[in-house]
Image (tube, rainbow, N blue to C red; front, side, top):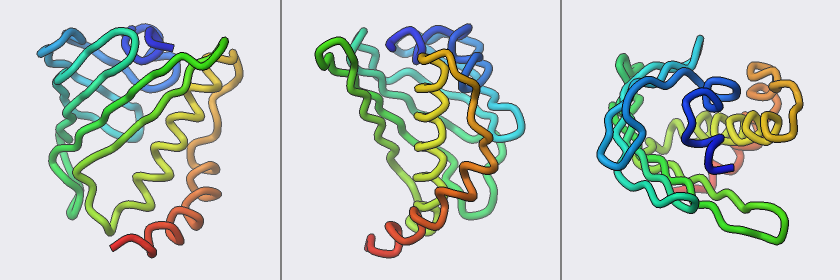
Length: 140
């Protein structure tokens, strides 16, 4: 699981194209074709259990943050691994979109590890968004 989150060739298989230094303090460029492009910094890297990244959007849309923070923690669980992904610095009005997006990315990772096809991102987003809208409505 750790290499699927940190190896550029594996990341390209399920997430996006990464170029740069993925070590502690390193800077990198990430391109998710048709979705997002930006730069990032590795703020914490504790293999194989914790990764903390600060991401900067090259061209944020109105209302989107210029910068977000993502933390991934991994813990052994029998023969498997529990992955927890936390997104920080998100505007409340975009919480549903980010929630659906994070779930889709985790599903893409699970499919990659299991050797399955990538999900249809647009169809998954349409299916997930209403539930995340309902959840976001209860956050204040």
